[in-house]
Amino acid sequence: MPLSPQQPPGHKALRRGRTTQIGQISLITFTTRDRIALFGQHTLAAHVARAIHDPGNWPHARLMAWVLMPDHWHGLIAPDGPEPMGRTIARLKANTTRHLPATVERPVWARVFHDRALRREEDLRAVARYLLMNPVRAGLVSSPRFYPYWNAIWL
Image (cartoon, rainbow, N blue to C red):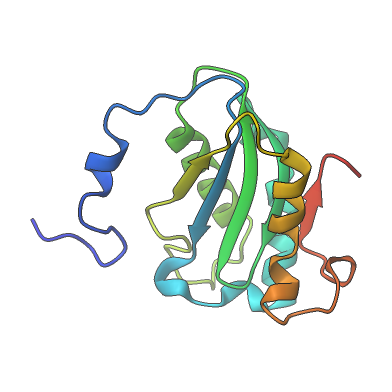
């Protein structure tokens, strides 16, 4: 069976044997299908931004910071239950997709996601600031305060 263009070779092999550690904060990134800049449209980005805050997305995890870019999403997530991170991400993708108008082509999100567990010595707020500066680095705004599609628990 050939791999889809959304799933790089070896992706399943990289995840094999991984476990979700309660309290182990991870930086998560996932993209839209084919990196389409779908959320460059305010209306669609606003739908998804509202959906991200739905408590139903987070029964076994705590969302600490996030930013929605035109073609991808970054978040800092701390699991607080035994659910695998892949299940948490799948729920988030499904729930955000449900909040979009039926006219938006499905699937919205690529199948895979990237995660990086933060080391204990990493400064969590510094990582969050780096994440929230994405719209500035992408040239979308001059300051994150002018970008409406993000949030962090420290506010």
